[in-house]
Length: 146
Image (cartoon, rainbow, N blue to C red; front, top):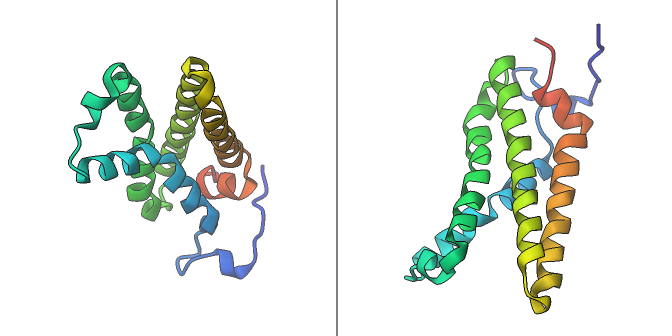
């Protein structure tokens, strides 16, 4: 039998459920970066997939790896259902790892003058994956025993 970690009172909501820390929402915003760029490019009136050329498949894969964030946003209010919240957290981890792999692929394919840019994005993605997977607080929120 595992014991739940006890947090200060301010970390719990009105229903007694443990809430996620503020930085979790910032990580989710970072994981949705492909969606943000897409919105900015489309609102600017450009056909960004045409400009991306051969990278359109990579871009679509980036968009798909950001979809678990949308799932978490809609499922988070139902934290009292352990099976749903656990599966959505595992899908979020899979999306973060997929995004890291796609960014590593882009780093390996990038010309020398763009390597530092893609290396910095890879570093942010590594921090994202390590934080989402390694945070005890997030595990206590999403992987609580039924």
